Image (cartoon, rainbow over all chains, first blue to last red; front, top):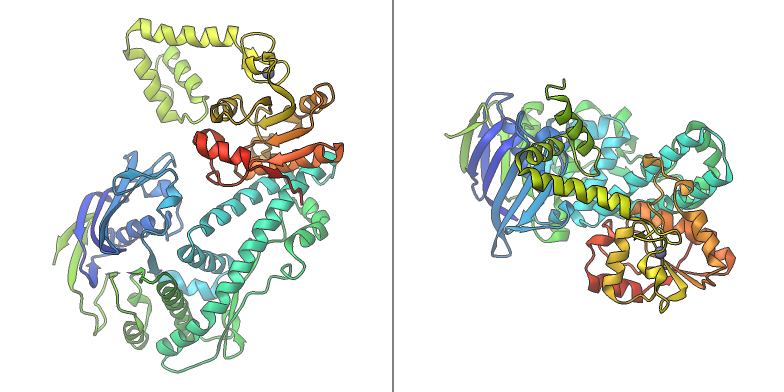
Amino acid sequence: MHLQHIWLQDFRCYQEAELTLADDLTAIVGDNGQGKSSLLEAVSYLATLRSFRGVPTEALVRQGATASIVRAEGERDHRTLLIEAEISSNGRNRVQVNRQRLQRTRDLLGFLRVSVFAPDDLELVKAGPGIRRTYLDDTLVALNPSMHQSLSDLERVLRQRNTLLRQARGRLTTEIETTLDVWDTQLAQLGDTIATERVGLVDQLAPLLNSAYASVAGKPVQIGVIYEPTWLVEGLAEALARVRVEDLRRQVTTMGPHRDDVWFTVAGLPARTHASQGEQRSLALALRLAAHDLVSTVTGSSPVLLLDDVFSELDPQRSDALVASLPPGQTLLTTAGALPSGVTPDQTLRVVNGELFAV
Amino acid sequence: MSSYAAPVQDLIDELGRMPGVGPKSAQRIAFHLLKIPTEDALRLATAITEARQRVAFCTRCFNVTEGELCGVCRDERRDTTVLCVVEEARDIVAVEKTGQFRGRYHVLQGAISPIEGIGPEQLRVAELLTRLEPEAVTEVILCTNPNIEGEATAMYLGRLLQPLGIRVTRIASGLPVGGDLEYADELTLGRALQGRRDLETG
Ligand SMILES: [Zn+2]
């Protein structure tokens, strides 16, 4: 979906705001804490139904308001599309497309797609496995919205299973055993599906990641992506049966897609421990670019690029390389400082304390 | 932080205990009830009292009823050999609307959900087992909701019932996944009933 207008109401620090987007590049400038990132967050909410800053959706509602409204008008397949979300402070959110209420919020997925570049993307390489799983899973949902159901089912089954394990207090009665069997069957089905999807995704991403890295770093280097859950060979059902005693003792599910890691190598060495800071930065950018590339190819339309203050973290050389590597398409970027040379916005807006001004 | 007069706060607290009613909604409903004409508010109070005093659960299937047995259980033309197992009594209304089912029901009064502290012991499972022989049940259709908890409950019952030599079927997929039975339209639910399959308990 190509965006034309955005309206916000009671979203973060915005009481009310409206903006018209350029076809290509819109830059949003302003000091920190004025609401630049919140604007991107609102757009990405319409695409992903959550905050890319990792806060619960209730936190998006402006202090003192009971609900925020985010509305975007744009074009898809030569048709005008109006998508709207009401984010409620009690967690019950609603969505509409062309003024028709959708039965479930997740039915909104797939109308708008975004690729978010955030300042803390370096964590994709440096931090624990959680953020890398999220990277894979977000890409899976962008490619196929029905994965959202499998992923939220997985979360739910794990919560139920872990609660049951705690209630068991380490003892395996017949009652607990039969109930545990039932959760294991569901967990195994979901786990096998999700891991298989992740394996397929990693295979698709690998070549794109290599060319994106070459473009950002300015020279080709062999980049590897490794996703090999130990349980995948035997299947999760077998693996869960094998670790059941351990799970009961620790009162938590120790095996499954929620514990997997995906990791990267630069020139054959693990990126997290052996790559230089510069290589890690290039890799983080390449990961975002590769996912964007894949989603564009598979879905046949480029996601809207949301660049949240990314240049402040990069040295001039890598900034220039990123600018040169960015694919064409609609882009929204925020910055607190100057833009790298070579970035010429079609439109610039200034944010001051939740209000937008044309520059 | 209670700043309301005690009776108002009591009303808010009671309303807040209702499923799906948060503190803010409870407050809104309470003040609505105080604003409307007295007779309207009393009519609601009477309806609650009447329902609680006159309606009980069917001693056989746990459907709501005014007598000992519910309308379905009293109806002699219904096929006693097929049982449709549902989570809540309101699901019976949904299945009845399809016109596709002529057997009897069994209401579990919930679904397995450790988070909510509900295990098989909290459900009407034992009561289900005692019905099988006297009513000569040959097929049990598991009509629990198509979500995680509904599936878990169906699977649990399947494992319990299949060794007893009873045919256990599950309503077909095609219902909105993750949803509640009560939201499915009659046509979809009717098709799901007709297309039911033997449960695979894995
Ligand atoms: Zn009855």
